[in-house]
Amino acid sequence: MNYQETSQLVNVAQGREPADVYIENGKLLCVYSGEILEGYNLAIRGSRVAYIGSSRDMVGSGTMVIDAGGQYLSPGYIDAHGHVDLIANPLAVSRAVIPRGTTAILSDTHEMGGALGSDGIKFMLEITENLPLKYYFALTVANPPHPEIEGGDCISEQDFLDFLSHPRVLAVSEITAWKRLTELDGPLLAKIANASSRGKRVEGHSSGCSLEKLNALVDAGITSCHESVTVEDVLMRLRLGIYTMLRHGSIRKELETLAPCFTSNESPDTGRVILTPDWMSPQDIKNNGYMDYVIKEAIRNGIPTIKAYQTATINPAVYLGLDMEIGGIAPGRFADILFIERLEEPAPARVMVNGRMMAEKGGLLENIPGRCPTIGPHGWRTGRPRKFGAQPGEFRVAASRRGTGEETVPALHILNDTITTIKDVTLEESGGFLEPRRGDVLKISMVGPLGGFVTVFLTGFGSFSGALATSIAHDHHSPYVLGRDESDMALAFNRVMEMGGGYTLAEGGKIVAQCPLSVGGVMSHRDIPELAGELDNLENHLGKLGCTLEKPMVTLGFISFSGLPTARITPKGLYNVKSGQIVYPRP
Image 1 (tube, rainbow, N blue to C red):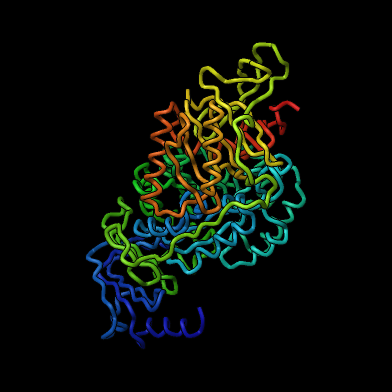
Image 2 (spheres, rainbow, N blue to C red; image 1 turned 180 degrees about the vertical axis):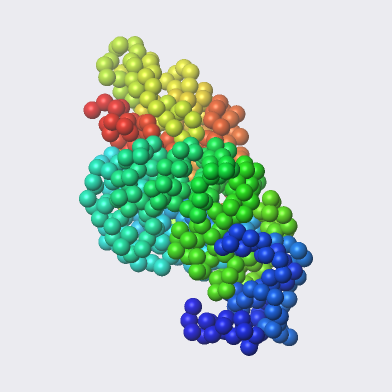
């Protein structure tokens, strides 16, 4: 704030100047003290709260007086670990989640950074400037996780340092390849040290860490982690001073398991506990909401009501160093205020952002203008995207020896939504090539480092009769296609490239469903309702063609994510994450 803004707030608080807005007859949810305060009214000047109390001295003839009618007044919700550069774009997310009470998001930049390099991060900063929803960012680093396999860092060291100077870059995004820290990756540690010296947070992704390894990660600069899957995981992180995020969204739902940590008589202090969806699909945003959904689930699973609200408001604000701006209703803070009928139902009746009423009864009162512009994939990394169409013959896999009749090879096997492993499969050999003609064995072909394809085999997707191509492949986003019929595979892949990215499903020589992601190949330009419809249609067709996955879109994105065990498809082939070796094609 400048002097003029400060002096206006001071004068309003003392009744020397009129407030712009005065809210009375509300029940104030004070997340600072953990109380519900009655008889406390709010005076707002411009975009900020000027006064909390019973005085009406600042109510003038031009003051808008709002009767809260006994509703609870809560600060706007904050997601401190979002991913708004994946599938849905920030404008679409803003339009959908503000009416549900989310008013600030710290977003990762892995996806647009991985897809477009520095241009993708610049795009995210520019497209979110001056939106009513406050967007902050965590700067991607160690992306992709294994550069020797997946290609070099998506942004240069100089660009990394330059982006750190941006006022809305508050953190370094989650470091999925945490072994690079424990094994003393010098350049990576230097980047983290630089960010830490500037007061930036460093997001962790410490899945599977022992206490000893976790200590080392904290030494390296990690400040948070969202990968707790047991109560002991939560306690271990809290005891080491790590801000511990409880995840409950479209990828993983952990609250039923983790909530007991905070419901017993000996529950730990929750000051460093934060709720996050860790990404919500467009369908889930449309059907369930966003941070309001996570708070509701926390309460349903036994976390005390006020603590649940604190973990989605003041706690993330303190973590991000924004608690003098957002996260609570207090003098000097932005007037991001939710009007709530019942605290057990966190979806608000009305939403005020920056002192202006933005939404009511689940709909926007003020339009958020603009359409997210398309930005095509370009070749910052060799081989992405291809400059030419795919031909069916490119997906053939040569047998190691001709005339054997069959051959056993390692395949990528899907265990669940996010975890994969290696499974040996026996394939027919015909004319010197291996063919997956029976069961659920498919081919999966990814664009390689020189622009050609590397093809391995896949099981666990179902007895799938079509071909599916996509440009979503965490974190490097090298396009790939899976299927059995090589002509359908070429058709689907070429259509994805023509669209500028997205998902395409082909079967019997025809495109049967598609979802364009024309913003960097990783985001749609459409709003949430339309996008959710396209994805539902795609998933329905996948099921009809034999896909048995519960969350196919999630699995398809993570099938390449080398930050999780045990095996992944990469631009160089089937990669064993634990051993660090390409196991197929055999060297």
